[in-house]
Length: 298
Length: 293
Image 1: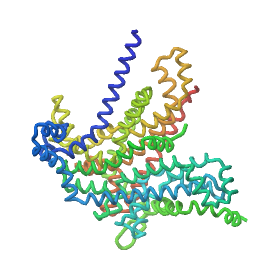
Image 2: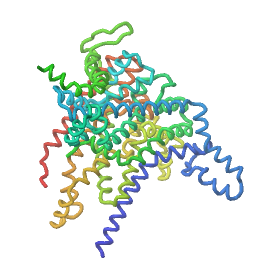
Image 3: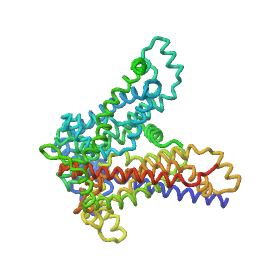
């Protein structure tokens, strides 16, 4: 009996710590969305309003029949977003980010799976050396190579175009490593059987290896999309024209120009964060898988 | 003979070709070039070989050492705290039921998913002097407002506070995965031997998590040495140079002053520092006595 009570107290304590930590963890994101839908005049007030008035007062106003005031409230709540879409190129930046991230994902999935297939299942002179050269460079942090990378991209003549952002992303090695581990588990008998059935090398890759590595491809696809969507430093360097900004770079210039309009800034931040939050909540298990496969094993 | 073998295996090369083209262009060439760049001075009209002068200049550059100091101060706090927080939270989550596990894991990973730019922007707002949440929170305890981002005393501390309060999502997930793979029988045996929960954690869980701990320490050291986004968005390295970090310095020297050679030399220092630290960490940690289960 005594022991039981002690364990309840212990459990309560554990939950208290975890919930406090979860609140600290989520407050910044909550504050992004809250600030973005506050009335312009309630953004900068002391004490801060934790529940924006459009949420706390809309229903009471509706119920008491003050439809007009309720409408004004909604109008005020959308003010930051209206300003964002009218006075900045956020829609354009969003499209840029979307196209670049989707292209990076498609390219990575195609090229990495091809290379992984070859490294996992084919024999050719120099295979292991070529593979270890790739994996060896994974230890070099990307930030160290900014200057020479910029020189290469400039020599290619693509600075200030979306190619400058996209192409270097296709050189990421992580996916080859991840998919190779997946494909090594595919039994060689399956490949032999397909070969006897008359499948060519590409047919084996396309009809046997790809379908069997779907979980790996899904994991890699989601990780690539998010990291491409969120990347900041390289796009900041690669592109100076606002028509080719990605969202993170666009947000930075937005902040440089509107240092104190926090409603506007937070609505921009919300636009960048929402797709990532949706993707994470829908595909949580792939994030977990990707991290654990990419990390150490044993 | 070799040619024949290569020709016979040509499809193997063809499959890796597209990836290797990108890899060569944007990884291998930059690696080789990074060595050349740091021995050169870039001018509008052609480049000039300057030998070791860039490296020499870096050593006598006060701003570089300021940046190193700031980066070290950041890393010394953020690296251990992120590993410790990840270990603590994962240990608390691990015994919970599935649903609760998923919920907390998601709550702690969500800020990692939202881009660092978004997180830094909202923290700049939270640290705002007059209307920010941070000072409001302090005022609840009767503490005076702090001038977070605009005073050299607090700016770097603010960036560090933000980093510590943003949960180490990756670390938590990796620890949870590692804990799930520890066989239940070890704990059962320990229970029979009369070990309580804490002893089990101390004697079984912790030692078996060592590879994960080592990995996280290295990754998080590398990460804190490369801190840039937060600084760029919250303080732009200021006030003065109070929050400038190594990568922020490299960025400014290379892409605002266009001194590529000089920035390249700084990058080399950063690279050597990171690799050295990673090697020291893995040597020190793996030389411990291995736990035999």
